[in-house]
Length: 260
Image 1 (tube, rainbow, N blue to C red):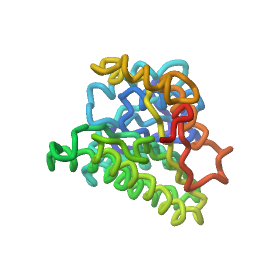
Image 2: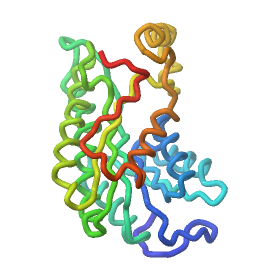
Image 3: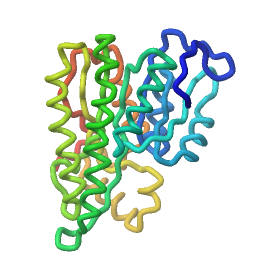
Image 4: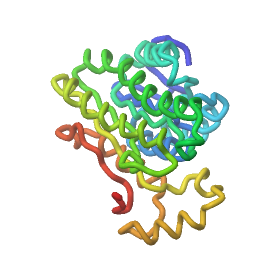
């Protein structure tokens, strides 16, 4: 995607006055479901991912029936990459209405075995990436006195053994969410987080302990199943909607009733 202004999208699709959303980590399971849901809701979606080939493939798959999903290669740990993405979207569409900070991953290890690189890589993507993207879109949203920022936390922010890096990063996302909600609310910008439990993405299905994860979910969740990516996408879509205009600084658990 280049930084150029235009009023029509792919194949002549009219993009005038359609809300514009960015979804980082958009090529993954929850990201893909979120891009699909927001595009179904009438938004232009910038599917942002470090993996450019995957972003292009998923965007092409989702761009059907008048929906416009644009692939964007971005490194959320690189402020210049993030700013270039936001500048290009504003130049092209004149707005960014929604930011979903979904990029992130776990790299699990026990404390005494966790390396500096394992800790920093998770914190850099999950926490710094959320900060960098939010900082970049804030001026665009402030100029229009409107915005929805939805951050990806996790039930792990409550603490998980073997996830010191991931739990610390996601706890930081919750604190960042609440700080930004207080700072940006005066501009009619809401900032919320979703905290999924175990979600049945491709990565989970191929996990060597998949059967154990299913068993634990049935035992520990009030809703006795694994979550689906669409469960999380639905929560994100609500927080990104007009109907959620008086909700900010909140954490919506999408965990089937598991909080411990």
